[in-house]
Amino acid sequence: MKGIIVKGIGGFYYVRTAEGAEYECRARGIFRKEHITPMIGDRVEIEESGGGRGSVVKIYERRSSLVRPPVANVDTMILVAVAAEPDPNIFLIDKMLVNAEIAGIQPVICINKSDIACREDIEKLYKTAGYSVIVASAEEGEGIDELRAFLKDKVTAFAGLSGVGKSSLLGLITNESLETGTVSEKIGRGRHTTRHVELFELPEGGYVLDTPGFSSLEIEGISAGELWQYFPEMTEAAHECRFRGCSHINEPGCAVKKLIENGKMAGSRYESYKEIYNKLKQIKEWEK
Ligand SMILES: Nc1nc2c(ncn2[C@@H]2O[C@H](COP(=O)(O)OP(=O)(O)OP(=O)(O)O)[C@@H](O)[C@H]2O)c(=O)[nH]1
Ligand SMILES: [Mg+2]
Ligand SMILES: [Zn+2]
Image (tube, rainbow, N blue to C red; front, side):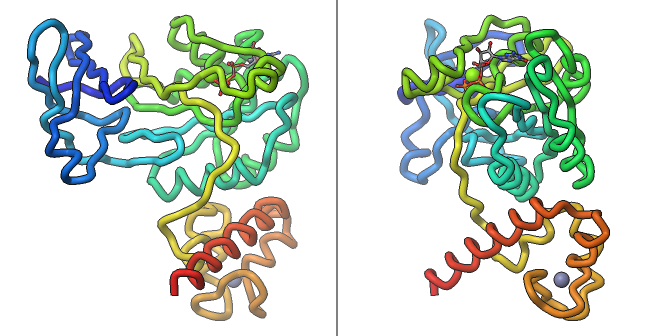
């Protein structure tokens, strides 16, 4: 039988089949030997062993895979940030965007809690960079239809800091009652409300994933010299620099610098570029 892993807890994988049945599965020992760990979102083949149990016997090739959040086969990532508490972390959003671009996943920015405050500056910042930005409020139901339009027939992950309202938005979209918690409760308890990655099937087709919030992320798997490719607003200009292999940091005749002067690339985005670039450069040096 074929299915998709919707949840993983304590070494068990919960596989949902096309017929809508869910099986509690263990992974075959062969995967451990080959150092393959099944991921949420994996398309798999299972063998039933009775009583709603089974084992994962095959994992189909992944279209994409992410470490943070740990999911496979995601098409779209909705990066949720908020206009109010917790304060938006622009550098983290920029890193999440690069992370998604590297994995070949379409990122979409969602600015939630518009009922409390509006941040037109953030909206403008990411629209200028070429991304879709949706202003939403889980409290008032704003932006939900706009979000839904991105989800049909796709696998979509919701990601962002703890407390931004991922589960609240998803609850409205899926009509599932997902656990949510106030920002002060989260700080008080020192943990996230959502602790597992979980995949939900949408009645209109497609799947959505709720993920726990995270606040740190390292960019991996690319070299510093490749980074510019993952900043969409830089790609065109990057071909016009005076020097081939321009790092867009301090070479003369750098066309990216002109973009910033002309307001076509935001200063904060360029700061993020430099910070990630230097970090990647360090890793490279360290590996030598
Ligand atoms: N005013 C307002 N509050 C919201 C909105 N969306 C969510 N909240 C509140 O923000 C708090 C956090 O929401 P959650 O949905 O638990 O946040 P989360 O992103 O799932 O957090 P983690 O699961 O910890 O990663 C809750 O108290 C929600 O009621 C909104 O649009 N407006
Ligand atoms: Mg949550
Ligand atoms: Zn350059």
